[in-house]
Length: 155
Figure (tube, rainbow, N blue to C red):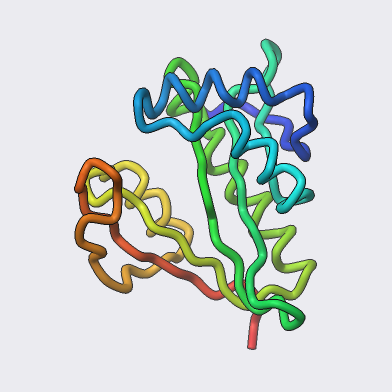
């Protein structure tokens, strides 16, 4: 059974919890807390957190690219507290992100996902993302990525 999540824009006070989720999810490959502070300033209203009764249980960061035209966005990072996976938090975050991008008239959302992360690939495919290509050695540990994309606005 899926549980309801409140989705909201991340605030500076969320950074310690976001970093804890990042560390629990990615270990030594976790992004630095300073990078999250930078992304919060740069990506603003598209740095989202999912909350349940016990607080923040996941985050998703998306940044708009394309200069003045703002034609595309990139999903930069997403992580869900390992104890909260399977509750629908990632889907809720992705749904909210897509709505926000649609309101901003962004045309396309791009991402790269670890080739071995089958659960994430399945989630993105469920939301209409298409595999574009394999990206050899994309990750610092040499693992391949899969570039994926989906249109946002109706043409």
